[in-house]
Length: 175
Image (cartoon, rainbow, N blue to C red; front, top):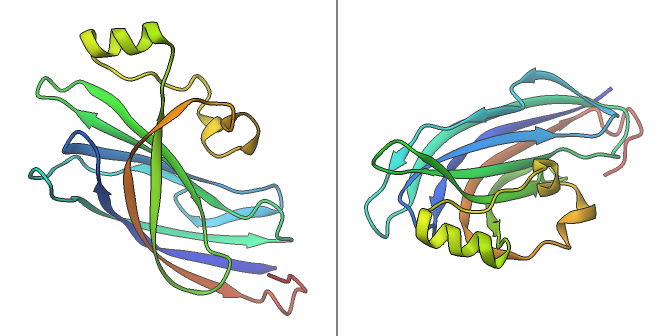
C-alpha cells in the first residue's frame, strides 16, 4: 500500500483578540485511508503571549497513513480557544487545511473564522461574553453546509509540515 507520513508542528497563532490561547486539533481522512501510527487529535498547551506577539505552541504533529486511493485525502481541522483570568474557556476560531499533496517542507497559514450568530446571540456575547459556537463541528471540514454560514475572520494559525510519500508509484496511486 502507498504510505503518507506527515511530520511537523503547530507553530502558533496570531491576529486573535485574546493572547491566552490553546488549540484543539484533529485529522480526518476518507475511507481508503488508515492511520498506522501517530495521533489524529490532540490539544496544545495554553500560551500567554505579550500584546502584538505571536502565541507560540510548537506542538508536534506526527501521522503515518496508508492508503488505497486518493479519495478523502487527509486534512487538519482546528479550534482555537482562549482562557480568561477566571479559567473560563471560550472559542476564538475554527479552521481547517488540507495536507499538501506533494512531498516536501511547507509553512502553512490557516485562516480561522467564527460564526456571527443571530442578533440576539451577538448582543448576549457583548454583554455576557462568549462567542456563538457550531452545533456540529464537522461543518468546519465538510464542504456542504459551511458555505451557508455567516462568519467573521478570527485570526491566523501557523503550521510547519513535512510530507513524505512512499510507494505511491509502485501501487499505481497518482497524485
